[in-house]
Image 1 (cartoon, one colour):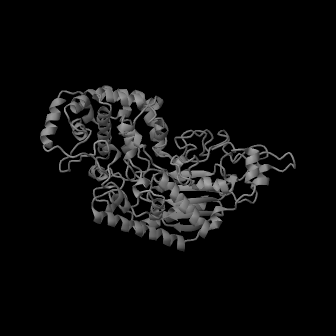
Image 2: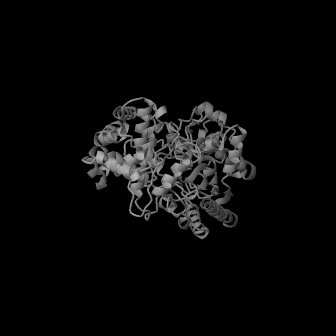
Image 3: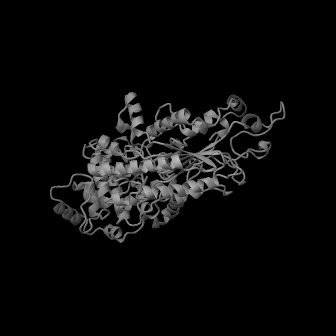
Length: 574
């Protein structure tokens, strides 16, 4: 789903303040006013809040808290260097303003990272000072002769700084394209983890041969090399039979492919990155990886995750369950998800899907555009919602594309949209991680701030307006019914078509049976996306329903799994 929060983790550096508006991965909305200004404002308010809270937590000066923040950042991607550049450029005025007891909203409006345009409301995260105009005038007097005001008014791009140019370009490419940045043989698979590498789709085992990649049918039963990267190749010396033939023939291998949005990609920002009381030298270790994955964590997602869960529950991803069922499925996963994806813009990146009708195994494709057809940041989001008629047209176009690319015997599951009213109902009166220290910022305030700036990932559901929340859920239900009708009525030659409800209320009930609370299933920083626990519970629900109703989708359980493990160990890992 489209989200301003990819900005926020880099906000301590202001590194991506311009990238969000200029290279948002799947943003097809060119009409939204002052988009970059809105994200710049959010980033500034967050950074200044963290600096102020670090000073409070450590009983230090503002200068010391800025230096502390920079010291926590890793050297990779020049993050630490960039942080010190930011201090050098903006630090003196931030110090003056915070020392004069100005809050983050006042600081950012004074430095013109936040702007109130004529006729527009005043956007603020924290409660306003009683005399806003007087306070802002006083703040401007404090920095009246500051050279940085000229910089902020000019709209300069921080990426124009020489030290950042290459970093920004790499990130822009990763956002704009959904194929690996590092792919020597151009087969859409990589030996590099991030920048759309093997965190997103199975790891290539020979990046100099385009005929070698995960998911293909074995070449001559892989007697001489592992052509499908599942770690199974060679000949059994006992009987001369190729291992691939012995262990995999007739086992119905198949891959898992997700066509999704930021929820499917597992968009996640660690609360440690913005919580002053929790920050340490270890807090930002994963930040370079997150940045080069667009702040997504597909390697831990519910559909294609291949790493062990970080949240301590027993449920596994759909891919890991397919692998456990048949080790011949090793590395056959593709997460074709993008932040901001919807039925409207999927055509822009569906070509990145890799499947050959003749050479490759069948696949299970999950279509899960679960939010952006009803979600936007517009001040009036209802007219921007996809209509049932338009959804039908968009999905049919997608299905025709899949039918022309998927091997015969594949399966496609259309996922319905959720009822997102649970967001406001369970979060609005809770304190956001940024507001927990001083009990001064709830999710309701966050939602209002983002809506005011028109950068909310979903104004319709992240709103105090109950009528708007209801209208959004009603449209989501209409779109789900459209998907259900398509699945029931349309037939395709190369795949069977199914529909599945987005069962968030069911997993809430399951979580409550375990003693949990509904709010614990939502990403704490953005207050919007399902978190890792929720994604794994959804994967568990998916698996159980398919096993019960459509077991043919999953293929056979491979009786040779123990022998595969005995001969090939971890099959080369993921």
